Amino acid sequence: MKTSASHRQAFQEGVKAGLPIGAGYFAVAFSLGVLAGSIGLTPLQGFLSSLLVHASAGEYAELTLIAAGASVLEVIAVSFIASCRYLLMSCAFTVRLSPRLGMRHRLLIANCVTDEIFAVTIARPGYVEPYFPYAALLVAAPMWAAGTALGIFAGNIMPARLVSALSVALYGMFLAVIVPPAKKDRVVLGVIAVSFAASLAFTFLPYISTLSGGTRTIILTVVISAIVSVLFPHHEEDQPEESDPDTAQPAAGDQSGKEASHVQ
Image (cartoon, rainbow, N blue to C red; front, side, top):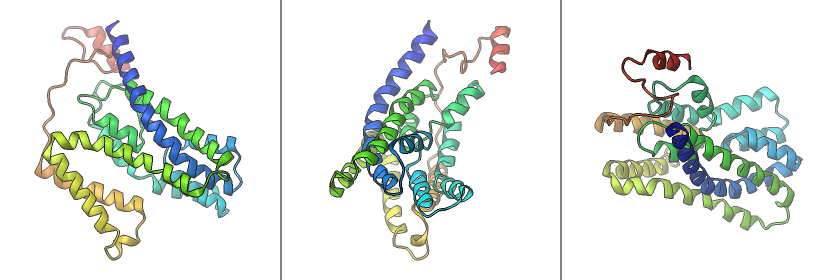
């Protein structure tokens, strides 16, 4: 019963976290829908595209290439490059997953990695509870897809300035994610400030400014995180005992529980 209650609580918290994320997604997807409609996609096609592709930059690249008549392999290759930052996020997730977590959960969590869901999930203490990102994506993804479909349907009716203004909502949500931890930890505050300054500098530096935004983000993430990890190493706190059978450490002498955990 305790396990079910733990799952239920994590799921409910994920739903609460996913609602504002979904609202931001819906607004941004509206402008994506305008682009999708301009190249001839129907609302149903746009809905399915956004439901299956959780990366805004990747989907923008996908639609741009479709408009240019690119081949399927070209679309896949460019979408992969535009979304390489998720490889870094997945690496960060691995150190926050319980060693006892089953493969099925690991594969499902990998499908929940978006910028915003990663941010709110990784900010939680302790091991990542799988049902939290599941719920957040379950709420946010349909709103992203619905925004795209509605943007295709009504994008040509709304003024372009209004569609552009709606996209600002997502940046406000990012601020809501990073401000609370920055208030509590000066190291986090310093890293955020350095990241902002370095990102601005990268847009003007010779050669680097010619790289795509996704590539610049990857470079900055690797360099800054490596420097911070060396200067300010993080010592993992003792994790509380887990009640999830997929993640829990079996009690000493409980051989049956140990064998069950290895089946995952």
